[in-house]
Image (cartoon, rainbow, N blue to C red; front, top):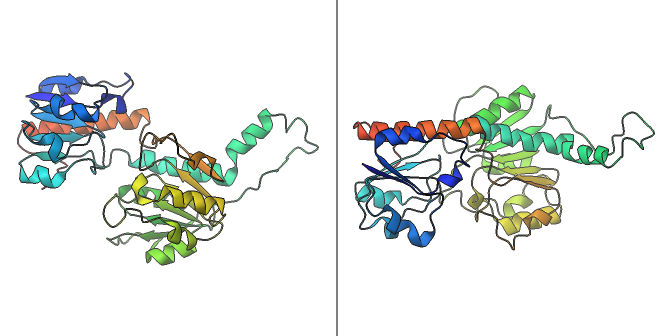
Length: 315
């Protein structure tokens, strides 16, 4: 079979071994594929492997494609309904980044409460050398113990975040469509979670229910000392409303790894907002995690070829 990989550069800078796919067919690799080249490049492909390439009716109609494999858990870039109606199997790489994203969530939390970056800059700028005391606590610090973390979305990543939070002796609230019986976790309404959490962290998929969920009105319901974290999808928040909430000190801070438009639009003013930490959609990107996603994606394709597809999202 002919296998086309449309956006290899989104998963590797040449540091991953992609040879497992070579054993499964004729592989054509593209670093990135412009929107106007997608249809042309996948026209005679039997299988397409991608991360963020948009595969909708316009790009898929008239092609030979019968399989789409994702180097990602999310699949909002794929028209799954069209694929289902036209016999195209879509498989994602579920759960490959659980630990990495949970770790990144707490990297934001720990940096915020322990002021690691600010103290590092203070020392590098000579502040400690000039200090009259051995311990110049010039930026306020705070313990995580007994703080309340509200987890919106309680799939595997949300559950991993809860596990880490409990290790820090935090109170854990959760909101999700499916309630789970997890010791030390209280399932509550979204309003209750928003109003009572020191930290609100988002781990739900982007869909009709979650799109633009976090707007100005939602931020107004949060505590004034709340930290908002989004490592899920940029579309679950309204970027302009987050900027406003931060600048008006409606909430105290934010840690953002994802935006609706990526790479960040050149006109975005998010980096200038008060008390914000921003990383460029890299929560999922440790070397171990990227090796894992390649293994999952190659296994998915192998299983499809053998007649028992796994991680199918459009049954």
